[in-house]
Amino acid sequence: MSKTHNFSAGPCILPQEVLQQASKSILNFDNNLSLIEISHRSKPFDDVMNNAKSLVKDLLDIPNGYSILFLQGGASLQFSMIPYNLMKINGSAIYLNTGTWASKAIKEAKKFGNVIVAADSSSSNFSTIPKNYKLPNEFDYFHCTSNNTIYGTQMKEFPSINGLMVCDMSSDIFSRKINIKKFDVIYAGAQKNMGPAGTTLVIVKDEILGKTKREIPSMLNYKTHIEKNSMFNTPPVFSIYVSMLTLKWLKNLGGISTIERENQNKADLLYNEIDNNSLFKGTAAKEDRSNMNVCFKLIDKSKETDFNYLCEEAKISGLKGHRSVGGYRASIYNALPLESVEVLVNIMKNIENKKI
Image (tube, rainbow, N blue to C red):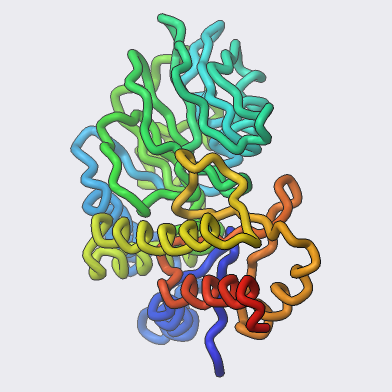
């Protein structure tokens, strides 16, 4: 069977060896029991949870004083949990609006208190990352989204602020080195660079919690989940297990520094073709281009049928752009091999050279 090149924005491609091991666990994980039928409080799964947390800490070089949680509800639930846990009564928070998911986070935060939008790139259809914005002196936290899957932009630098820093890293976590000490909360849905949909990674600095004077429902309180080791309710066992396997794969590969180089090579190859091919153009500002989600358009509409046909013949999947942008979107997450990008680039070259 020929290889399918999976450029899906999410849920996305996972390493083949991870899929193989995960599939075996469905039939026999421990003593002829399936992973999805064992107790989440059993020692085998307790080991999975602890190993997953240990891998997160190791890969991201997380110091003591932070808790690592595997929760549910996706990043969307974090849009409410963040202000519930960090915004004081009658408090305020600052948000950077760089795309659809940042806009949704802002909408939820406004239900808890005053939200100040420090900068907003919606006027350019979110094709840029705002810069040189000023922040007020007093606020409960600053919230940003590191990578925007829909529009193909990515924050290359994070501001130095006098307050709590919160970041939604759903679509680029584990793809590049970050200084974890700059952040007080990081959250990320698993389904981009970590595993299948179903769990959400939250990394939170312990000392910032319990200061809002809010009555927080138990299920939405970070302290509840910290005390219960992410098992206040039944956790998404399969998603956490596959995430653990993916993180183990990443560590064996050489860790974040290795995958960052590989991701840069893939992005450079594809962006270079977009910039030098007369038939294509990128949609994001060059200085803000994402290394995870490459958004581009075919200038000559008459070539669309041929391009789409060649992509289908080459078993390229998931290339259609989001309706907000149109065109094409190649998501080149950690597990996507360079070979897949080379296949796409060769098709783009052939279209321009009329070798079709």
